[in-house]
Figure 1 (cartoon, rainbow, N blue to C red):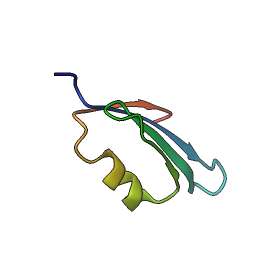
Figure 2 (cartoon, rainbow, N blue to C red; figure 1 turned 135 degrees about the vertical axis):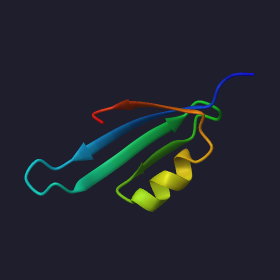
Figure 3 (cartoon, rainbow, N blue to C red; figure 1 turned 90 degrees about the horizontal axis):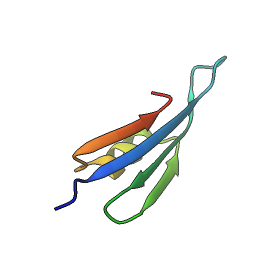
Figure 4 (cartoon, rainbow, N blue to C red; figure 1 turned 30 degrees about the vertical axis):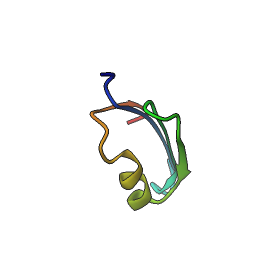
Length: 56
């Protein structure tokens, strides 16, 4: 069985230090996510066996 991987990216402001966008793609179903909501992001990545990130 294939491993469940979520590929993630973040955009954080240099000056304001705020999260402007969190993006992700799930390998299991190809679903995508784009939002600045940390809670929604956590729900989206829940259950993944691995996270593969950029700008972390």
